[in-house]
Length: 287
Image (tube, rainbow, N blue to C red; front, side):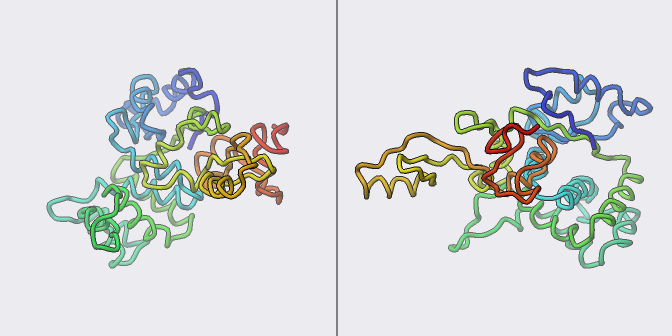
């Protein structure tokens, strides 16, 4: 899997995509490994990068792309790749995999698990979580299917997931091997939060669980805005002096962050407030 780093596409530089076009040239463009990024760059990957794209500007595939960007571990990200590879292989009339593909899956998964995956893929609306009154939550049916299918695949350890990905690639001829981490998604500050909210929100996650703009008060406290309102109402001398962007563990563990930056304070046994190298906190001067 490749990572184009912060140069893609800070000013719509095409260098990374031109490099992509030089890869896998033994295959015709439509048969090359897929490229994963946010949907904004899908047509660029096809036209300039000469590779298939997982998500495109028609917003096809944005659910799996958003889930991948927000994923919390290599294990989860690999399971999501496997989800995408097997999803088109279920016949929607018979609601089943082909005999060949089913046989491959049964080398790694139980009969019950394979059957459940077929059911999830064929009937995603049935997996939308419910509200207390029995109505559907505001979750896209494709995200619901991803949420239902992913835990089944994550019952396998990383190594078997990787092996199964390879086994699925052989009969289908499909693979996903590139990932573009885009600087426009990076939330750098309270005044420049980037567009990470788009893939996170459209994957039906809460962006506040990843990053949050909080109020810096005149007494030195940094608190969420709803808490700040209560404090201000109770103390007329208190004021909001500025805003601060707070990075949370879900952001630091996300596939986007791991690909784009790589590490942060908790990875070297320091407090999360110590920040991100080159970006924030006491680690801002580290590169």
